[in-house]
Image (tube, rainbow, N blue to C red):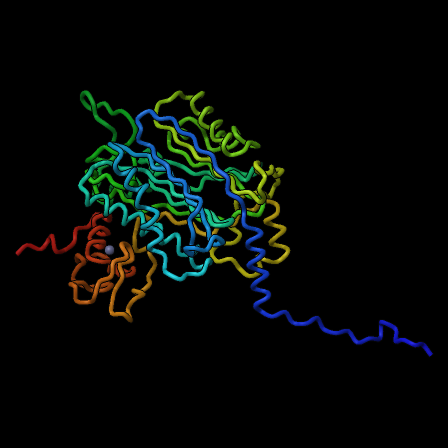
Amino acid sequence: MPTHVPIAEVPRAKPPLVPLATLIGRELRNEKLEKPFVKYGQAALAKKGEDYFLVKTDCQRIPGNPSSSFSVFAIFDGHNGISAAIFAKEHLLDNVLNAIPLGASREEWLQSLPRALVAGFVKTDIEFQQRGETSGTTVTFVIIDGWTITVASVGDSRCILDTQGGIVSLLTVDHRLEENVEERERVTASGGEVGRLNIFGGNEVGPLRCWPGGLCLSRSIGDTDVGEYIVPIPHVKQVKLSNAGGRLIIASDGIWDALSSDMAAKSCRGLPAELAVKLVVKEALRSRGLKDDTTCLVVDIIPSDRPILPTTPRKKNNILTSLFIGKKSPSSTNKAANKLSAVGVVEELFEEGSAMLAERLGKDLPSDRNAGLYRCAVCQVDQTPGDGFSVNSGPFFTPGSKPWEGPFLCTNCRKKKDAMEGKRPSRHTVTV
Ligand SMILES: [Zn+2]
């Protein structure tokens, strides 16, 4: 008789169930471990002194909680003066963060960013215009949280993404009237005139501009003296990098008038960010000379604390893809998806560039209804019902115009919305 039971005959115990809290804890630890390092370099050459930039690497989603940190990088290229660029640099970030619902989880926070960016840009524009100054500025505004990058932009500064050896992709669009036919049509439909400068008996010179004002851009913050159809509503794009990381090059038009996206990316591959940025500026100078303010930020999002972004070999499927649009599906954590991201596929989470506020703010009803207050979706100011407004419809609209289908806007922000769309509020057209 054997003195022991053969192992094969021992009934196999099921693995014990892991408590949910432990699983969540593991997930959080993994998230923490996987959080990339963000390294950056900055370089600038001034010609007119109207470029400003913002770098903040110590922002926190939850104040006092270092594991909720995120970074902000932005470039402001001013025109007709510097006050709009300085104002945007000082106020835009706060205005964006104030438009994010309090107590949002990380996932909700990321999802609400595109909307909050629209609200923050419009609010900053309204506040600047109230100061009665006439300058304007482009804004390219980048928020990096973990592997997720959200870029909002107005004007012709640009942000590109280089997955190091992969495709170089543009995360912004150019709001130059010369380059953007859709924007020309929008400006014209809203009551602006687009044409070149006329000199000496009808000879046209220079790029397409918007009149009155003569601005070459179709979107900006500021520019109170140009028509309201030059809107501050940003193009917004949100992508998630694979854990191979990537490099952002954010720069004003002084760089992009001299270098293509590919040239800029290739000119500095394999170098740490602080050196790379100097090379991009040098390369732009070499090819064009210093004709304009030239400001550049290079930001590396890298998987480890190495100074250099690893170069990934170029592969056929190493392209920016729209495979996962919208919310990340649970299956994207499985092995197949991890394999896909390992070869450098970038998940495109969100992209929208419409200049119509109704399309950008969603259709949510005011959130603070229970408190008897309505919060403006743009400026975040609470109003009580009876302050002389109606929600979602009412006498505010001119006959024939579509009813407002967006969330609650205060009187001031609604005026702004109508002005941007080339409509006048009916109260101004009614004469007694
Ligand atoms: Zn408002």
